Length: 393
Image (tube, rainbow, N blue to C red; front, side, top):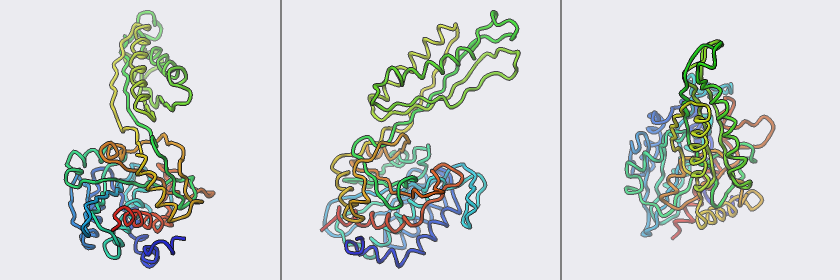
């Protein structure tokens, strides 16, 4: 079906090995957030070679390539992320990471390669009128690279009427495209609770104020926020991922520390969780005669896809791969994405491309994960068709 709808397919078939090689090269040389020096230089040099106006260093190691064509005033933004994760790769691939403890375990190497492939086609054979802004972002994995780029003037320097981004999705059939209007990905906040008690001898607990007992009660009480304060049909997550206290079995320590991950799919639920966590922790601490210090750190916002742009993105996908390979309104995801901050500034849509659902498939953020190179052609063709449709004469 693609062959009859886009001339880009022939281009990507002819150049398939080239872009697979680029993807695997990036995979072999992964770089953490704000350290994507080689990756960003590779991206910038390719874009410049193909005729884009290139800006390096936006948001630290971010790159933007701009291509203007025709007389239209319409402006489109496409974004890919570039950073890797601090994980030791265990795939055994010939092109496995050459850097100990760092790997592309989330497929950002593939996202970058897909957008680069589309960039070359659009520069050399694309048929459009308007301004195309290709945004290669650093530090998506918790570093807030999107915010850094915006603080450096991303949308002042490169205004966009709409912006789009794509992420691979293990567990979804390869090449299928998944969309969701509205809240698609959760917010992610980080909380450190330090319980201050009074230390003492384990044989005389009545002379101490035990922070471990208080912390344990706080852990259990926190579970009631989701079960009793959040509406049953509203997604909310309060996870206590770490608890640190004490060093010996006969010593009551002075402090206990809890580390929390807090997630929601609406701004209202996000605010409710913060209020209830703070109130509940303070009340629990008081009931045990200890003091709780709460460090509540906002992370990524809820990712909200706007209706018109999501419907446009769906239509492009349906024309490209056929309705049977398009999920028009997929389930929300509890993971988080800093593309959410870009969508607070510019209307747009974040979509998922299936990485494969066969036996032996691996989820992201896993030492055995690898991006599916079969997606390079589909992903690049999608970006190309979306651009030519959005910036049509």
